[in-house]
Length: 463
Image 1 (cartoon, rainbow, N blue to C red):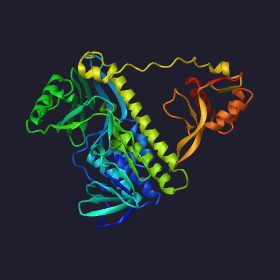
Image 2 (cartoon, rainbow, N blue to C red):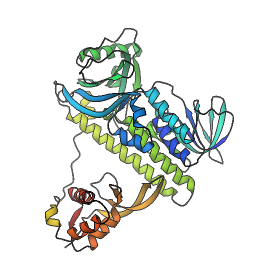
Image 3 (cartoon, helix red, strand yellow):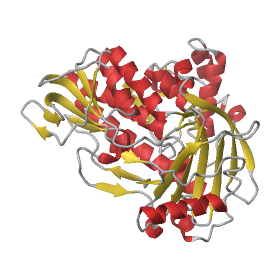
Image 4 (spheres, rainbow, N blue to C red):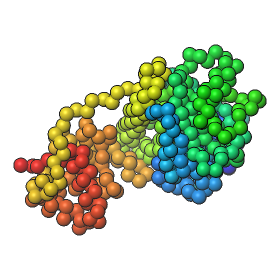
């Protein structure tokens, strides 16, 4: 890490050195901005699980896959006792359980290689200045044009947050232990008053975490006693592992879901858990944090360019956080609702919600029926200019919007949708439009795009 000292002025100060902060710092430094990261970890990070969906996000950041694999344990299979009392074996090829200290250091080293400066220091409460912000840290001050709050649940910028789920606490501990050959590398089990997750860590250790309601937590001693009781009640989770030593430290932290309504303005932005928290059941906290960091970098670049697109940048990031929060809330509610064994217990009732009713729509028209006809977007779907991330900045582009889509869609398989929709509406038939598409892209890509539009009920006969 590059040392720095004394007062100074930078373009962007990122407070927090986790995955979100590193993901924002690296692309901004590559764009030529003076970026300072104040990295401080007051407690060991817990988000050690990377689902297979994390790899494309790490690719977008430019992190070498082999380097990531060296700081983790491959997860090929999970043993899950969730819906019933019986364990299911689920294939998770591509998943990884990482040593978070080494993983976070890898991402920070990547940011330094891109040109960012990293100081191991805790940023303290900032204050606004004429030029932006002044951020104090242990032995200095830094003035910055733009401030990035990547402090996780410390919430450097403060503000009011809205809880999006019942309050949840995590009890956790790690201790020496090896999985036997052939055993699933990750294990999950439902209990009447919570659920357990246990995984092999790099270096011959395991971690177990219990997610529970907070009403029984009356002090550290009670938390430790309850955690051991939960482990005892789920022997299949810790099967063939050494017992939790009496000397092991059982820690407690908040794992509730929440969001901030105001996440970005013209000189500051919240990323990762400083913007919103998701239910740990998703096992996608790390990749979500990186995604917000990459999106924030494009937003900041757009705002600092001062080329008239600042409003688009703010709108883009605000909408991204809103959509991500709603998506993760729906997903977690559905996963909790899938559980049946303890469905009537309070812990599960509070977190499971029946799926929202799907608005009645006409069924998709089969491709064979539409091919000889001229087609158009089915109302209320329409083309509308919305903020989109194009490369390293945010610009407005026409996109397909519809109540049935989580977010407007401007590109599919890397191709802009608007010109293709316009060709649909001017061609003599859908078959003619497909032939036009196939002159500029592979046949398989054109077929996949039209199938995507039809499956979502977005096309209808123009006549």
